[in-house]
Amino acid sequence: MTERDDVDAIVEQWRRERAGMRPEPMAVFGRIYRLARLVGDEQERVYAAWGISRGEFDVLAALRRAGAPYTLAPKALAAGLMLTSGGMTGRLDRLERAGLVRRAPDPADRRGLQVTLTDTGRRVAEEAADAGLATQQRLLDVLPQRDQERLAELLRELLAAAAPDPTSRRPRP
Image (cartoon, rainbow, N blue to C red):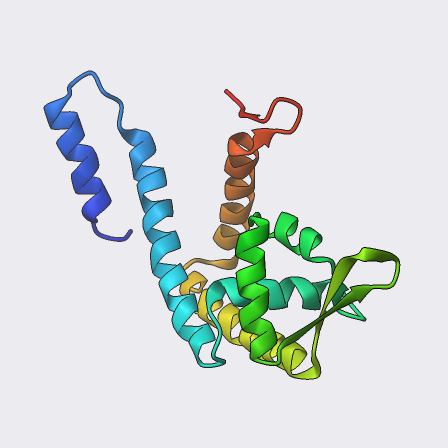
């Protein structure tokens, strides 16, 4: 068992200061937030070796996962990455300047565009994905495989509970 951490101290402080409060959820979500921040910062350092940010990697990875010909509409990319069109445009501008993507008119919709990975973009996406996964696996390796799988299942359940209900656009109770 890992020794007590800062989150334990925060939970204990709340217990001491507010006897009726049940701060146990802080033990879970405090660690999720801290872990996301720490791993996110580490992923930024990993992707910097390819001259890209984590957000730019997300765009390259979405295009690579789309399969050949590694092309998506900017609107589809933005929706999949939960970005505004302005946020997507900024990322695409940087990636296009770096020669990692190419934008072209959509032959099926003369008002639309298509974004395609260049050969260099595909190489960067694959190499950065491998390096990012190696970093994540190194962190997960402190847990036995069975616990890694159970953690993934538990987090899937929490994420589903927190996701907005598509019919109401409100978080579920």
